[in-house]
View 1 (spheres, rainbow, N blue to C red):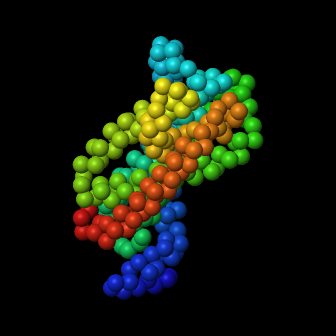
View 2: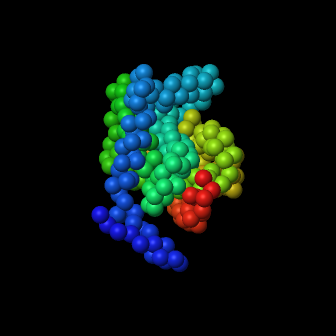
View 3: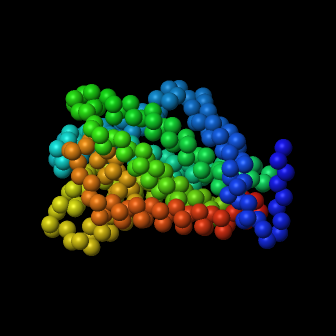
Length: 279
């Protein structure tokens, strides 16, 4: 067993090395969360399919059929919504799980030393498993509409990484706040719900970017939402030439995602030493 010595004033020197040394704990927590998520459920992993599927159906009926919303691109509306809903569902779940992870694991936090960053990071894995399962919905729609992705799909892992960075960065920041201010557990669902409507899930970003009546300032503000770049990237990868990837705005989203991650890690590390006493 490896012996770890924490010297006063030198607690940061081996922190990132400790993350590697404690990777076994990371795997254990992730596997435990996966088992707990589906334990004693009636339909088990089908929840990972039903949740996004029902949302896609509601968006298609309410916005497309009743509200006459169009995809704005040369793809079926349901397929466009699905390609946007899957990354959003991953982000929303990963962000929520990471934000509440320290509170859920309060007993573990007060007993032994380990890099606390492992806790919110491991919770993101559960959301990734849900995402992989929910891809069955997209496969079914591809078959139904006779739509085949092209070579763009090879770049999908890049945008998946971007979604993970965004969710983890925001989750780290809120999880640290959640330890000190428990009110944030009530704010998290509101953030997720509000984000759903300002992100291009039920509509295409082309409606914003290609509209001459919308000023450039509004378009830039819209691009500040990091999930805009993630969702547009997913659609570009999955739907190929039927969608557009607005590069300037996409680069803005990348910058915001990286900034969120850096800020989240910085604030989390700053507050980490007080978690055991506060929680």
